[in-house]
Image: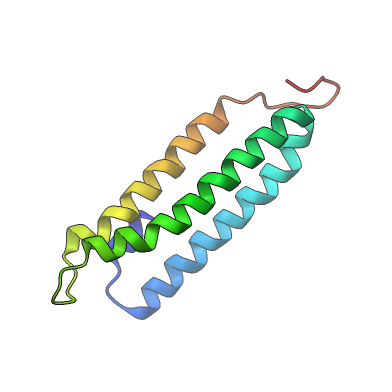
Length: 112
């Protein structure tokens, strides 16, 4: 995601978007295969509901932030354009660190 800030052509934007989408889809595949074995059903349900709620809130607020940060002349400063990318990428890095703290092997063990 950090590479999006260096994009100069449509081809680089497309390439970075494809790589980002591929890694996100891989993350969801691992998440949905791992969590049923690592977490009990009530915890999974609560976590899923919280993630869904935050996703919807973010999806609702993102256009409002874009409207609020776009100057009246329609131009976009570099800081306004790159800020959300850096915030999103930083949050993904935090998620990676938190994921590394989860137990690795789930075979033959009870859920947390």
